[in-house]
Image (cartoon, rainbow, N blue to C red; front, side, top):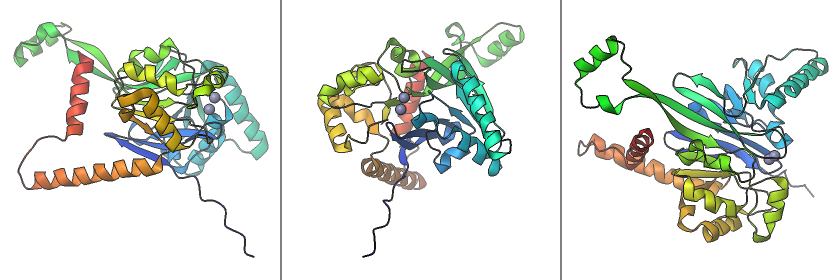
Length: 329
Ligand SMILES: [Zn+2]
Ligand SMILES: [Zn+2]
């Protein structure tokens, strides 16, 4: 008898939350890596799915193997494919051991792999590009751990100058008056592995339009397991969804034991209508239907525009603008 071929697996989860793509793989204890191409950033690198190689920075939440196992491979493949030196941003307590690990690879491979390991303490920010910061946020897991937020910085006109004409504003600016102030707009927040805590109520989480959150446990009697492993339980999500204003909350780090249909059902039961804003990264079927709808809506609005019937922005664009205006106030 001819044996069966091995199972096909490794398909990347994919959610389009305009203007960002959120893609990757995340299964609790196995591997987590979530890539946002528009930010040139990935969160964690448990294994290294191919597209994640293109991210020039990886924000490493903590060093459990399912989040960090792909670190040396990421550095090595970046070099091999001539993509430039990769950068890992991590908790300061992890920087030395990670450098030691890379030093061990020199002995193992008899060659040196270019790498950059940047320590970022909780509360500190790193400039990713102009007007975009990566901020490390203290969270609570079973070792040194961070959450992260990508934060846009914009300068806004101070309210007392709102009614002045442009030439007067220019005059003031040239005269040395500070007419603007810096405003921070979180765009994507990532919890990493964590238990519940006040840090999840910071602006970076409550105001980000996209929050990528772990939720490892869904069974009613698994609260204790969540507490021991310092993970989130679906009942924590109920509280968090009351304060997170995100239009899309993306759940990662669901354990393989939990079927997605059960997780969806429990989410609905525990979080009610708020669950409509929640997506599971690895729910391929549901996410594909949503994406196909987005494609159809985009085609329909392109057709309407090409007929010259309207110049109205899509509802998604309106949402983004409304959010930005709200956050800057
Ligand atoms: Zn984990
Ligand atoms: Zn962990």
